[in-house]
Length: 596
Image (cartoon, rainbow, N blue to C red):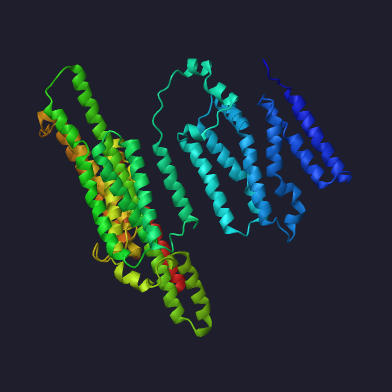
């Protein structure tokens, strides 16, 4: 192939495995030492890339890479089994050699990606693979010789994550950071590539840098490379930086034409980041300020939603009716506004979901720590040391990050707002998801079964619902499913009997009158099973009567003769609820008898 030489694949494979077999045989006969085995194994294995890459230096750069990566596995194999490990300075030297070998291997990575994709890869993709391969090449060094150093593992995870983010996001790389060799430049200026794909106008990808920075900062904080647990000021700067990065990324990526929303979206993301970070790692004063941060976040939701498109609506209404092109422009603007508002709903649903999850986790952890404290008081003196160790271990995992004067009791006293805030966040998330279901899926019947479990994030709060506790946690889910299906069934009946501008088609004895009466009667027949099951889920007590089984046949007409699919679904759920209630009551009865 012009100046390149393509060797037969079977010869490459045959000579490679024959050479490795000879090296193995000579090593068994003790004719060559371990260093010679290591060098020969790397040299023979470096021929395999010739199967799909035809450039001349591929064998030598692969050999250098293998010689840099394999010493912890081959050269230090005996030492890693005993107490003597690689010294730290040798680890740094090996890491530097790995980085240098990856740099020499960059053109081979470029050719491999070009062979796989069929076109020249971007600079971000090439840099991502180089960074990821550097991290993976250092795994043997850390796993075999520095497994006792937690910082080394964390840094390795951060390097690999950086490479993966570059591969997925492919951010634009400045020309000063890139290396344009003859092979890369020739591939980028190929006339075949232009003739096949044409001149593509690429979308601006600079916001991807902000998302990469936000994810890497989060990973650094999770792995404790950034000690936000112990420094309140650093925690503040971290949360604000994460919020600004995510806010600018979302604004530039999804709301580029709505400049009026950029400031509101950035403020929203900053409030969300501050709330989540300081809820997980509270400080002495955060419990007093966080309710106001959440109130600001809730207030920004309707303002941002209503403000989006308002100015563009005014410009559309203010213009006079023009030609057809002007009408098309107005229609496209209206569609863009509607899409932006749906995107805003999805953004706020995700924010409220995250807040509800975080508060649920914190309240569960707080209750567990309180139970450990009460258990330590009740136990005898001999068991107090064990309980204290368990309690301190649990405390160190989470709330040792707070200032020394902040205690669990103070959290319980000043954090009484957390259940109410979590409930508001869960309900708002559920309501927004229902709106998205109507706008995107047309009010799908199956969506309620996936959306109702969001209500499991509700917390025990006497101000919210009297008597609502942990035993009643499934009641909102079943109640929401039943109420949603009943309301949508009523709307379907109304929609089928209303004929737009003509008005009602309900004539006594007419088809619409018969349709409405029949389906309303069948819908009412499904109520008893749902009412009994929801009452059973709320009370969570054993049912002694057989009323659920008596009401079971009332669900059959809705399944057989109903014209509305939602009523049929209610009938099927009524059957399932009755059977489940009977089985659970029987199990409770058997458990009670065994206890007696």
